Length: 123
Image (cartoon, rainbow, N blue to C red; front, side, top):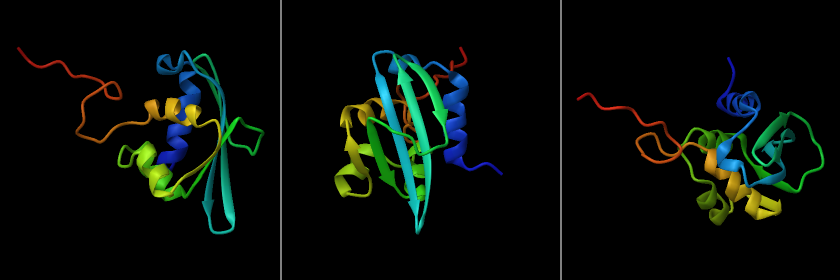
């Protein structure tokens, strides 16, 4: 079974282009720390064009957190800015990239907004 984090990154890579990031360029590495083990995800953004690799490469911005918290972020159960303010997530490099990428994280399950598709109501 594929976990929510892997599914999130694979989905970004399959999209290839994200309109919400059309004004964004840079690289982010997400370092997910669990004990002595760290899983790395490298996200390259070039004016909305996306490429994801699971590797420890050079990046403009490095985000560090626990896998559980990151799963909550990409599952819409947690907010990245709140996690940063609490100190549950660290950022080294360009914080603006994190704030831009946070736009593609889903919002809370019952929220409405640009992160969710709208359903047409029956007439």
